[in-house]
Image (cartoon, rainbow, N blue to C red; front, side, top):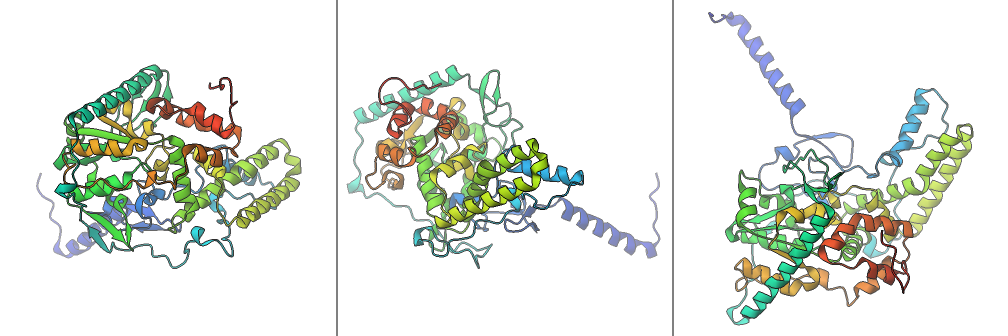
Amino acid sequence: MWPVRIPRWRRWPLAAALLLTVAAGALLSGPWTASHDSDHLVWGGPAAAAGPAQRLEFYGAARNLFSSDGRPVSPSPSSVGSGDLLSVIVSSSSAAEEPSDVPIPSPSQEPAPAPAADPPSTNSAPTEDVPHERAFDRYDHELERVRPEDVEPLAESWLRARERLYAARRRRLKRVCLARGMELAKHTTERSVLAIGSADPGGPVETIKVSHFTVVPPHKTMACLVNKVASTSLLGTFLKLTGHGVPLFDELSSPHSIASLLHPTKPGEFALATKHYFKFMFVRHPLERLISAYEDKVVKVDHPSLLHLRKSIFNTQEDIRIRNRTYALLRANAANRTELLADYETKLAAYRAEVKARHNVPTFGEFLDFVLAMDPTGDNFDSHWTPYWRQCTPCHMHYDVIGKLEDGSDDFKYVWHRMKIYDKVKIPRMNALKRNGTSLEDHVRTYLTPVRASVIWKLRALFKLDFEMFGYDWEEMLRWSGHCPTSGTCALA
């Protein structure tokens, strides 16, 4: 075929049209992301970033109030059946041209509870003039080195005893995995087509996601770092060991903001680490982890982004207390629509006044309602309470060490020994172990006793496998909280 000759006077218009077409295609298919404080789209999402991310709306793991693809997490995580249903009924009534004097807004349309006029300093946070983009001030590359004279030799008998303990923990885990029929999803990519934890006739399904793992190639180590289980200390050390350093922002350490640098995303890297690296994970009592998440991310709001979490908790509570009931009544008594909507407004105003009176701080029970309204996968901010088995796939990863924060000192020593850094790098401080002398029993009595029994049983259903796999006592916790008789056997279905 002979080439088509284009007259010279037509070439420039055609070239211009071609350039406009390419530019338009790039804009339409480019990495657009939604701004977290508006409905506008912002050019330059995660797919457009190169190198360490410099956006820092949320320091640390709080960055995950945005989903992994850059979209803000819905203010109401409730599944269909709560807040969304009221949006449906209002839309349906509008489509049927029924009058609606007082529309019921969905959670995403409602304003956040008004801030208290004079909140305590521990619960207050600036909400205005917060920059959306700030560069890291600097990076901290300094490891805390161990002086040779301070190295405590690890006796061979001590090492063998630790190895026997870890073998016993692996055996327990294996028994539970076999008894529960744990299966592995067929896809191990970041975007698995199977929902993690979904049930099928064979039992619960684990999904391996490379974004849940951290590799330290110089020391042939791979770990599943779990939020609220010393993850910040461990990740900071690993970033320094690999030469990346820990980014600092307004004097705040933020290792989680660049955690993706240590994800095994290179071709073949995850398979290599799975077969040949030393692998470990750490756990702690599931309730202690929940309490820690509540205290650090809900009660102590030390960053403006965490106000969004409070708003989500309150929206979920409004779903449970008011919207769901109003929806049910509207379906059963359509003739009383005006009265029901007026009652809805009254109850909503009363609840928000109550919230304001306690300085906009959700209760632990409200926090648990929020947790139970989600299907935690460990991909977003829910990684602070996602069950361990969903986060780390322990039935199929074959960890060499399953450490417990309760035995943190000895477990960390052994991990450091296996990584060959015990006599070189100091073990990071474990802030989670410093609870001002408050015991687990005291925490259970304080936080769990006021919680409704129905919530307790839902909580058990969510974390049941964690208690079984890692040897924590659910029945003892129930007795401490008064939700189980002090004598006899608890009815643990």
